[in-house]
Image (cartoon, rainbow, N blue to C red; front, side):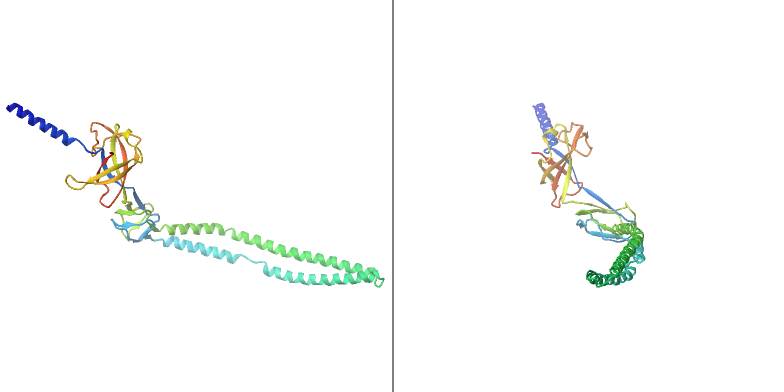
Length: 312
């Protein structure tokens, strides 16, 4: 009788032990976020920097200013050189104005000669004037037309020479404008602009410190949506797919859970050894596959927190 009682107690303890080890979830892991490290894009003193750990920042917000005195001075110098080029250019207006007045006189004379030619032609036809008088008028008209052609050529020549001279001067303008644009780009990069909407995780610098190109300033992540990186066995792999809706839960005290809807957004195509901190449904499996489950955060889920996944 005593032996039977002892055997029964041992059996109950074994059953209780087995039930205690049985998992009521399909996979587990830790929450993570897509973190962005914001680095300096310019070298200089950090004149202002308003980032603090825990701050919620919107994308496009200017959170700091790096000293850009040197590129500003370089841009001003370049712009002064561009302005000086404009002063070196010349205009053909003064030269052509004299020739244009001369041409206007010539055209007036030509109109008078045409009228005289018409009158003399009628007189010659009526034998009232000698033909030599008409020939002389025709010669004068021909000579005056040539003089007007020369005046037109002079005007075109003045414009052409001036344009050639100005092109030589202004050819230096395009490279200077490019240089000024480069300095403006350096000035713009002096502003520290927050790239994404999220929460500041770590701030690496303080106002007044020296910033160098590529030096990390702070780390930010969008914590409105977090990813639970969990692990499944090869036996579970055929039963999961991208876009699959699952349940994710986190601990809320003793034997209490808070549950969230989740979506599988990534499945690793390569197996890996089970991380020591992760327990899968099948503990006998040495190789597992990582998955990511996207969960909308209500503020209770934190980066690094442990979570469990239920497929059904």
